Length: 55
Image: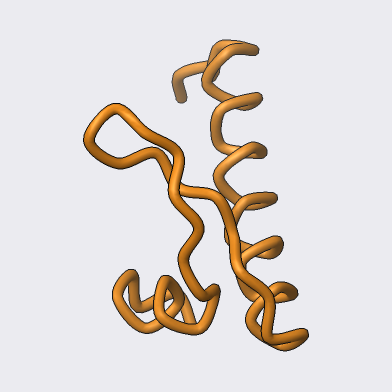
C-alpha cells in the first residue's frame, strides 16, 4: 500500500470542501465566483451543480 503525500491529501480535502460549498450555495440560491476566460464571473450555484453532476 502506497502512502499518500500530504499535498495530495490536502488537495483532496479542498475538492471535498468545494463540493460542499457549491451544494450549500445551491440550497441558499446564491451565486458563486468562477474563473472563466481570464476573468472571475458569478454563476448560479444550482447551474454549476447541475453541470458538474455533483448531486
